[in-house]
Length: 253
Ligand SMILES: NC(=O)c1ccc[n+]([C@@H]2O[C@H](COP(=O)([O-])OP(=O)(O)OC[C@H]3O[C@@H](n4cnc5c(N)ncnc54)[C@H](O)[C@@H]3O)[C@@H](O)[C@H]2O)c1
Image (cartoon, rainbow, N blue to C red; front, side):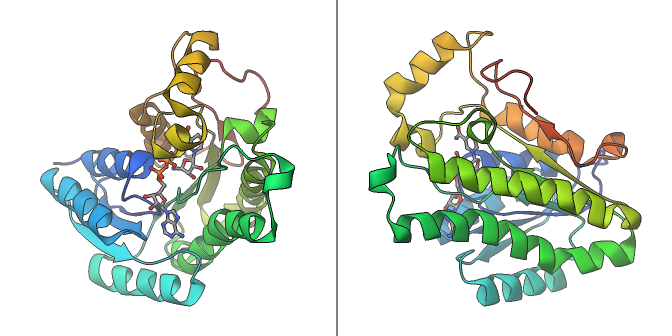
């Protein structure tokens, strides 16, 4: 079926579970073929099945994003199978885990930045040459409201997301001459295993009660923002941040 993303190839990192799976399915419903990436093979296979059920093609790339050589070689193999990536969603991430500074040792800090910031950096580095050649590309970086507002028990997570926001702004300038836009989507609190682990069901419920709209986003709310930024309708939007968050954070994009 033709859609606004027809025949685009999208790579969604960390799309085996949670919001990444939702992004993969929504992009496929709008016509894109999907490179499903995750460290968890079964989860990636499940998302790939869901993508194929929409009628689009899927390629499962199982790799630890912290292993840059293996991960980027896998991107090359996936592009050989499906075609050059024109939409990249830098989504793979790990939970901040509700840690005060005393609970963040060097290993925890490094893992956060290696997974989130270095992962997004080298995923982008792998696909940008092809986007430049084709003179069309969409990069959507997943950040967080906590990078905008701060969060008292997630400073290393908020810092990693703020670093990604810095990548968005710099890449928007660097890649603009090649028809490539780069934007951030900063989800509010979405119930996934990340937030169930760090906040718990009660914590998430309390946040919903405190949100101006009295509800929090669902994964699809985030995916719709991603899909719009990936489309031609957003051709003039670059270097920006959209935060679907129920009003949790207002006015600090
Ligand atoms: N859930 C929220 O409220 C929320 C809010 C703001 C931002 N985010 C961000 O959204 C993104 C998706 O999170 P989610 O809530 O869907 O969590 P999730 O745990 O369901 O999804 C994260 C995915 O990344 C994968 N991943 C983790 N480490 C990896 C690695 N080393 N190599 C390859 N894949 C790896 C996981 O296997 C998983 O499939 C993350 O970047 C997260 O920080 C989440």
